[in-house]
Image (cartoon, rainbow, N blue to C red; front, side, top):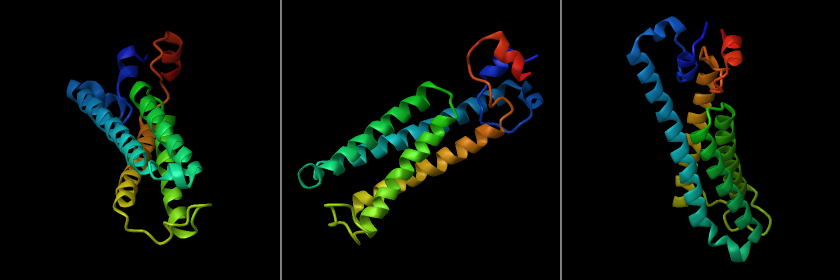
Length: 171
């Protein structure tokens, strides 16, 4: 029978439940989960900051790009909040999706150009754009790893609901 303590253990482990008997293992897993979530949250905040800085120039020339930047910033911050305050695996998918959408926008703006915004075609070495690609790539990589690792964890399907019925279903 699964206890509430076992249900509260972090998800990022591939070890069998018997290996969790040692207290230091649970602490190490909690630290690993916090580090992964923190890394993705900081990356999402970086995406928001980079695009806030870059959005200023788009207000006058291509206003729809400005609003797309605002949507990306809002999506980044909302996803960061979901990662901080829930244990949902889908938050990692959302983080990867938000970052990947920014990468796609960057590539499109540098190759074919966007409507009323063809100034950046071929401008692959813009420093802010390269910083953005680095942060977005890191978010995609870490959130992809976290999503995959949490699926392999023995207690991946258990949410912290605290009800006896959910805990018995996992046992």
